[in-house]
Each structure stands twice: as structure tokens, then as C-alpha cells.
Image (tube, rainbow, N blue to C red; front, side):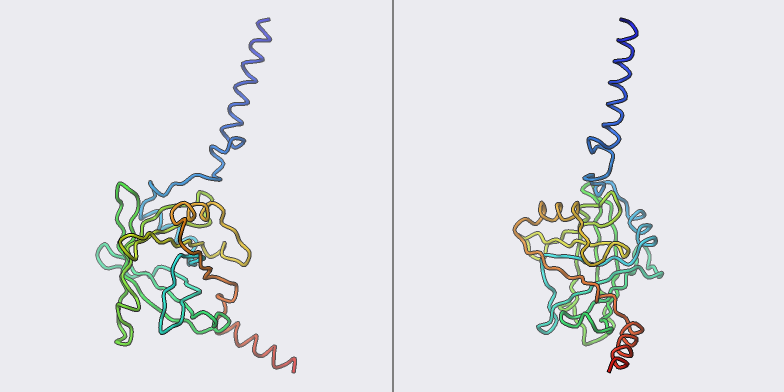
Length: 223
């Protein structure tokens, strides 16, 4: 009888260990959110490893002369200014994803670790008189979700006082056609349940001058 009791106890202990290590989803990283404890240093470290990040989906359009921004890519520049960092962002206009030309924008970025989580303030550095603050407004983001699998993250911001907007971003290696980001999309739905979901990424976003001209040469050879 004593042997049976010991065997049963070992079986229960093994079952509990297996459950905690993935069967029950506790530590397998499929739903966990570490945004509330993520630091600016860790965010920047991830950028260094995986940049750029692409804006996959967001709940608003930024409009330039009746044209929508799309193909938004963000990476860090090496320069710093005091406690601020510099990010370089490029984008295209919707309908011209296939073309290699991008529009550039540099931002002064300030991180703040708060009790609620990481705050990211992005203020455009205006060097061209044709580009105004209206075109590139300052945005104060909150990091709402950080995918434990390292694929994506969710930012929120308030473009108006009463409305919360969302931006879902994915790291470069994960931003591909047909990719799904279940954890981040679930967080998007929770934070912005009544807001639109505009898709801003497609594989053509990666077209650069070299690949564009190679494609043009191939097309000409066919004819």
C-alpha cells in the first residue's frame, strides 16, 4: 500500500509539472503579456536585434493631400540627444506600394517607464519647410501588449480625448504576406473594439530601387 501511495504522489507531481510547462498554457508564451514590465532598454535591444518594425494594422489613416500612408517602416538611428533617441521612419502612399520611392521622416523619441507601463513619445524633426507639424504630428504612445513570442507588439494613443486608437506592429522577419499575429490582434480587439482595422502592409512594401529596376529589366526582356 505504501508503494502505491508513493507512486500516486509521483504521478500527481509529474502531471502538475507538465501542466505548468505548457499543457495548461501557463508558461508556453501563447497569451502572456509582459508590456507592463518592459523597459526602454529592452525595447531598444529588441530593435537592435530585429529592426525595422512594420506597422501592420492601425485604426486610423494619416492623410497627406488626400493620400493615405502605408508601408510604414521604423528603425533606430545611432544618434542620441541627451536622454532622447532618434528613429527613422519611411512610408509610401497607398496605391504606390509597388514603387521603390519612400517618404522619410525622422523623430525625436522619448521613453518613460511609468507605473502603467512604457510610454513612447515621438516628435517629428522638421527639416523641410514643406513638411509641417500637421502632416507629422507628435504622438504619445503607450505600449499595451508585448508578444512573448517576440513577433509583434501593440501601441495605443489618443488622437482625440475620447477615443483610443491602436497600432499593431511586427518585427521585420515576421512581417510577411499572410502572417497572423493572434495574440496582438486579440489585444487590438480588446483595446480598440469599435475602431477600424486598416491593413498597411503587403509584400510590395519591401520593394526598393534595386529590386524595382531588376523587375523592370525582367519585364522588358519578356517583350
